[in-house]
Image (cartoon, rainbow, N blue to C red; front, side, top):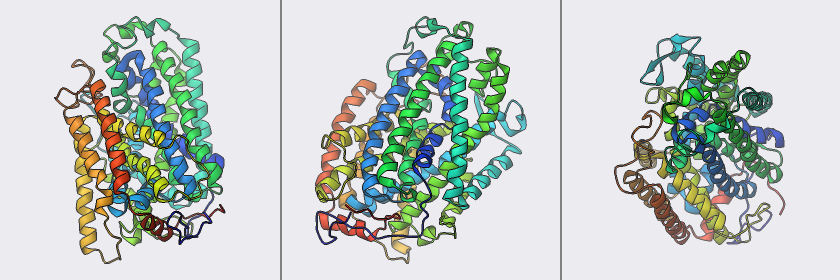
Length: 558
């Protein structure tokens, strides 16, 4: 990044010495692995099996490939500009304030929802032994009574640990991730050893008993995509790692590969480990005693009591670690919004450990409020997946825009193939939104509209100097999103009417199915991609935004 600042085809960046750079290569990898192996692995195998049957194995493979494509895009961007909260700040460079706020607001909402969902996962697994925590209602487990106090106390704990600094967080996370990896590998080995019924793959309605479309429906609805979304933490902590050029690509790509292998093996072990007598009513009716904690319940069904107890312990540790990580991510996103001058500057205030403590406090308060509209784990999943997919999409366009705006910028990690990988990543993000279904997307749309009200109020009444809105350059965002939402409204991505409505998202009422929807979205993605290239900021404006916005990490000679 040592190219001249005055050149319209390159940019230099200022330093911000406030944050600490205490995250090493393995710690950065483990922020991704730790976030990916959270509550998703505790519930995803059962829910995906209920939706797609044995074909759920392919759901994990396809979900991993889609997230990997998005991860490749952010690897190039994060190495080029190792900033805190990069998912928010990258769109600002190429498309200005409106686009960055749009991505930033929805990303912050989704991240703020993850820590509460991990709290709910812990409580749901504890329910058989502490029934006072939750109340079962129509197949859901809802927070009730004294459970509210426990939920708020856990939110406070995660917030406090994050306020102690990234060094404390990274060391604790490393220990917890080794534990989680050991437990999940042990579960796979034990299930294969104790009960292996390969006939389960084909005998009960075939490999895809509810149709091939369910393979894709399960990706957002069963928590498959949600499980992989933790890869983003290599982006969010890029400004706090000691060698971003090496560490960031290693963390982003490595976390997805490691966990994809583990999740596919776990799904196979779960499907083939089920006793055949529980499949008599079909996969969509699959249930067994203590299904509130599916893996522990299957362990008991197979007579492996010690493993069930181990999973009960892990149900505290795994979600706790992921909740801890996302508590840190959420604070860095609000910090990044303020760095872009799209939020009050008080959110950038750092304590003596280099942590934005006001952002930590905001995360705690908003996270507690999320328990009200989403008091159950399964109710969170679709919203978080759809919202994160929306927030990832802008980065897929930024990479193409920056190659046109700043072609001479030093790129230590550069993707081959021109626009091909960014386009595929953008298409993947669009598909994840479509597959989430209208019933989820309408809630996400409401959340975004609330954000625009906040944005308008801040620009009208805020006293701090604010950047230009740059609506024209960011106009692709509402056009793209409205198109995807219209498709989800007229789409039908559910398997069939017999599926459990608590687990399968209903989609719309129109004629656009999974296959036609994918074709239409492919064309829409290409159209929006090149429209965004046409309205991008001029090169000098992009360079000016990069120079004005600190990287939060040392510059690198190039």
